[in-house]
View 1 (cartoon, rainbow, N blue to C red):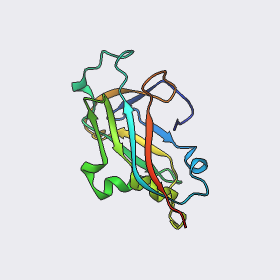
View 2: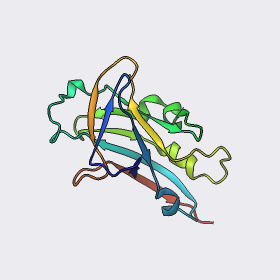
View 3: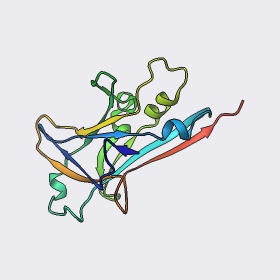
Length: 161
């Protein structure tokens, strides 16, 4: 997992005309290259940074974060998991994990499917779900942090022929 242009330890999300984050998954092609797999589950866990920037109370976090597929022309598409079932997709704050959690199994499967002629690029954009009418903000742990980094957990079954 990579954040566009950096391996920062923190990421900033803010509504209105605020800040969004571009996520890249550069190792997905090489990790599962030449394998036929069925994605059982893919969970993106984005922990909140509360130590360095502890002055933002949970009540000021966005109610939900959203992920969009980034198209080659720069437009956004909803990820397949959101289109299938909004609550399943997630994006809400988990108080136990102290993180925003997303289910991305269908998105990842569609990306890896060699028969998909409309294959999406792997890049995603994370924004505040109510970005048009809420100035809520949150600081998240990035990939360059020392502990509890953003991570993608993938469970898959390799298909043998």
